[in-house]
Length: 75
Image (cartoon, rainbow, N blue to C red; front, side, top):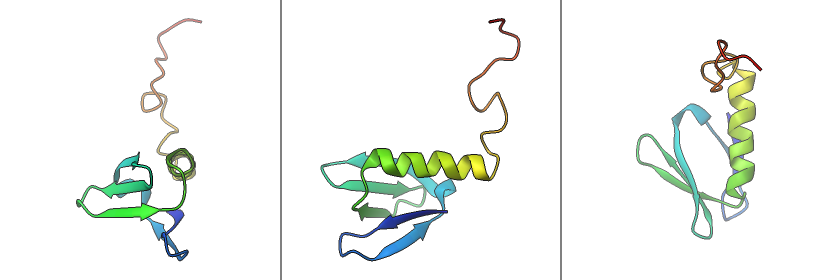
């Protein structure tokens, strides 16, 4: 889950697994896979950092293939 703030100042949590896109126009708009949209005070980069932190916490980014790494490549 990530914590974000509505434009009225109230905070709430979103399940990061359902986030399809994060855009700024200029307000940050989070679109879920259900089509529902939320406009929040946080900048898109801050939301994206929270999403990555959540994925790491639930070990979704622990697999090298999901991180875009190839174990066969030599450094």
